[in-house]
Amino acid sequence: MHELALKLQPPYLLFIGDIDTQVYAKTALGIMQWCPERVAGQLRFPDNALDLGVPDMNIAQAIEAGIKSLVIGVAPVGGTVDSRWTETMIAAAKQGLDIISGLHLRLEEIPELANAAQETGAQLVNVRVPPKQLPIGNGVKRTGRRVLMVGTDCAVGKKYTALALTQSLRALNIDADFRATGQTGIMIAGSGIPIDSVVSDFVSGAAEIISPDNHPQHWDVIEGQGSLFNPSFAGVSLGLLHGSQPDALVVCHDATRKVIDSCPHIPVPDIRSCIDWHIQAAKQTNPLAACVGISVNTSGLPIAEREPYKQQLSKEVGLPCIDSVIDGCDLIAKQLLKQYPVGSQDHA
Image 1 (tube, rainbow, N blue to C red):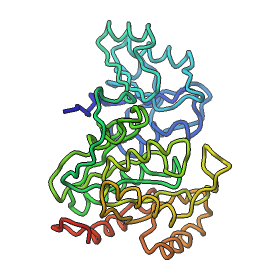
Image 2: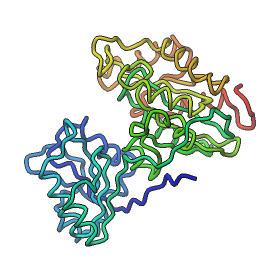
Image 3: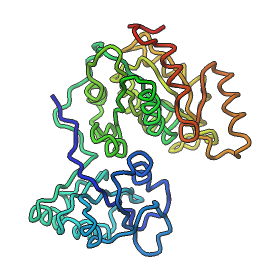
Image 4: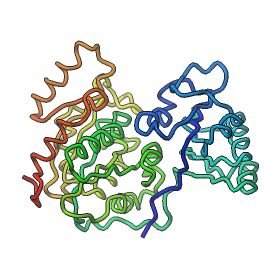
């Protein structure tokens, strides 16, 4: 049995340092969106205009406020860690604060930080480190039900859609759990596996572990990663798709994106092709897989165009189309239960 739960101690001080764009601060923003009750403050460097809407604090003020953990809420451009970041983490560890990080860099690799943590007993929590000795996938059918977020590309709202869908299902008194596969989702859920850090042979096995056997009417709502249409990250997407054995799929899309993010010479696929490709691949481990809705990020469209866009797309594919941030996922939750009624064992 693999232990997927992490020991994350709130309240949090969210570190954003000198990162002043939302794209690179998505971890901090995600935590603020989905578990604001755990956050007591933010630590940003002077002249950083990005504001999470919580009090600014330094390490001394955080200790006085009873904060337990410094959460690295940002990703550095190029993957390198600025010396000021390191100094801040060391100062926090010296005061006994846990350091929670989703960086590819392991915190223990910073000697002075490791020494400070050892002296005070502070935890160094590397969220992006997968469990050891993961198995390969076996494709054996598991009990319970699963819905997986997939996408036309990367960074199109799969995590937000999964969280919103979990919320909608629970509001309908459906037993549902969000299953995290990325560092921000893991910080929100407190458990999961960072799929992008798993050796490729074991991705489908990791996906099986994330969503184990459960009672027949339980839904696992699984955060997707990458895209089958993105040559840079399709491998992790296919492994997650096969290992998840999804009964249902939700396709996520950015309304204004025209080309694949990391491969601008490749156009983004149309929604119907995306549905068909994913269903065909999903049937390898679940012959009854079906799509139940479309989640579109419409933030780049003029406000007046958003609703007509969703309505037209819904008409084209014959499924509900929502923006999970603006609308929530109630329509997709109802479609899911329509196609998989409570009490039934198979796809309706």
